[in-house]
Amino acid sequence: MINSVGEGPSARSTYLRVVVLFFVFNLISAAFFIGFVHRPVYDDQFNIFDVHNYAAKGLSLDTLRSQRNAPGPTSFVWMAAAARITGGDELRGARIGALFSWVLLGIGLLVGARSSGYRELWYGALLALLVFPHAVEAAATVLTEGPALFFAVIGALAWTEFVSRADSSATTLIHGMLGCLFMGFAVTCRQYNFALLPAAALVAAGQFHTKTWQPGEKWRWASGALFCLVLSAVPVLLLILAWNGIANPSIESGASYNMMYKASAGLNLTRPIIASLCVGSYLVPLTFPLMRRVKSSYRWRMLGIAALGGIAAGYWNESLLQPGPLNTFVGVAARAFHGPAIPFGVFTAVATYNALALSVALWDKRRLFFSSPPVTFAVLAIIFFIGEQFGVGGNIPFYDRYVLQVAPFLGVIAFALLPSLDEARLFGLVVLSFFSHVVVWRYVFNS
Image: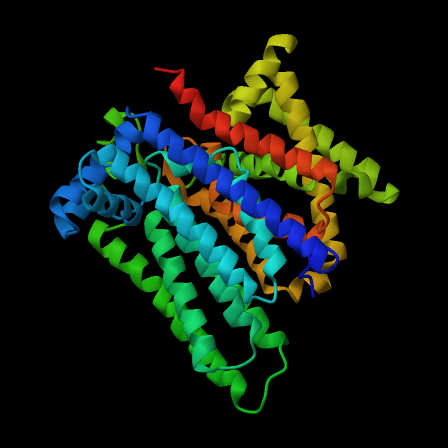
């Protein structure tokens, strides 16, 4: 069983202190930003419309159908409730609501992990999330990721606890119901979280076939699991009925975002490639030590594939580079190389090589990983997250901020494969965290 991120209680305590330190620092930074920056920044100007709509008129079929922004309504309703409770400045109230969702997420994950058989993996999930370059921004501004992550990650924690137990007791069933209901609400916060539902079903199916069961227990557990999975679909189906689809009428018609963007279900062949590049890029600082551990028999073939990937990415950089920190990084490097093709190609080659090294490591330890429900769930959630991009029609870019939604699952995989937290790895996490604070505090200097 892979459930350790260190050796012994001392390593566990040290690891927990690191997670708590990043968590508290993020909250302080976001709280100061909310306190001192009173004007709309980034997507505040768009998202505050729906927050105001729900705060003023409440949740109804009319307010659901008049929503303008692409994400589901639950995060807006969450922030609208905070704005009504706090009163006064609606923008600040909505931001407080977003920050509160991160408080609940961190506390819920830290407390819930203590009773889990995989507590260090969930500590790793929280750590990877906290250092992600958009984490503080999502905690300090009117973004929908905070409530979405709260429901998604707490739901995943509860569900993996359910499937890891070979009994059908009431306590176990409550874990399953809570997990699936939360994951369903996560989809209604941000539709990309739909990837969690098939991942949950496949993890349950795997545990159903591999566990050793007491007489009569197997089918009672399966009935409970099926009931929970049906429960997860209820919030999603209600939203689809309200909107007559998975996207709201305004964004489907192109009436949102000043007539700039349109989104609906459809076939998209380039978006999964962009999503894969973004996921692979953010895996590098989490798993880079794996690149040094590749067997010599694989190394040259992997280098060849990585080089081809880098050349292709450099050639099609205009189509593949999307808004976000990665684009900014490539843009800075492009000044020295007279264009983005070379730096983007090199960065893609490194990310590709690292992803291949990660895949080999996963394959080498496949028996151990299939016995760990959080890791199995994390791998499937990321695969489905990338795969569902095939069905995203319209012209909204794939911002690399969207990877924040699967950052906890990247953390589960990274810290299952690499349990130690040495100085080099800690330095990489600190650098990521530094950029997370820069991303939000730059708005102080940008009008």
